[in-house]
Image (tube, rainbow, N blue to C red; front, top):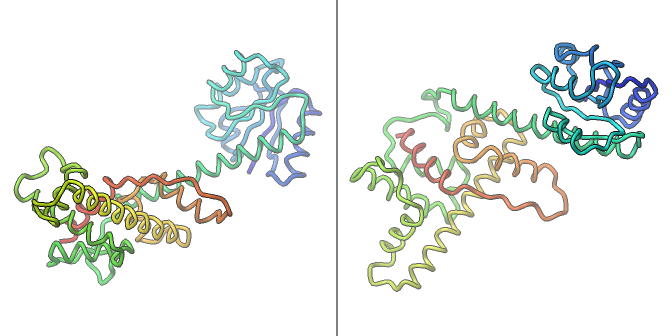
Length: 308
């Protein structure tokens, strides 16, 4: 990370520089004694990632400086001051600072705050990378080739469905059969009524398929058991697909499967959460990942149609 320090006290600037460099937090690429000396263009030119700035300075104070540079400077801002006024601190946060360090300078606090800001900056960068990948995927035009990702004319609806489930790594999952039953129901529904008023609800869909499987004479208890079992199988299959795509993304972020499918079938925050979980490999219970079943199922239906 590249740092820039603004403080009218040279001893503070020197102390912060030593802490940053001694603890391998990054590189200090510039200093200034007052906000007047710094512009957003200067920070941009120096490729500054994190700005540390004093709140009170004789010429232009920290809040005014942050307000001046923010239209251009997109990095993180850490405010430094001995002032403990909640109003001033609140005003500083409203103007765009990301964290606050109190004076007198405490090395442990500086290192802790800076590491948090660095982690936040890196996480945002990862999310932006995924967003760019999603945007690129949306603009990709796939042409017919021998590759698995390309459209092949002449496929039936069922063929395209099975092919796509294989691409998503879940053809062998028990939930894949349930997914194909849902796809066939949507296909028949569209032929009869179209989707002018949107897709049928998943609750209604699972119930109709369960009735078809068990028959009209089935009891409500049996229906509910079948619906619940089907939902669980589908959810496990979707989770398995997420796991496979996230693993693929960690190995090769530009892999065509990852670029094409992760953005269509999952929210980018969900993919990023799973990638981070796989990457960390910590011996802790991971945070639960919420899967958008509706998004996955509707995306699967549209993608099948795209391939026939």
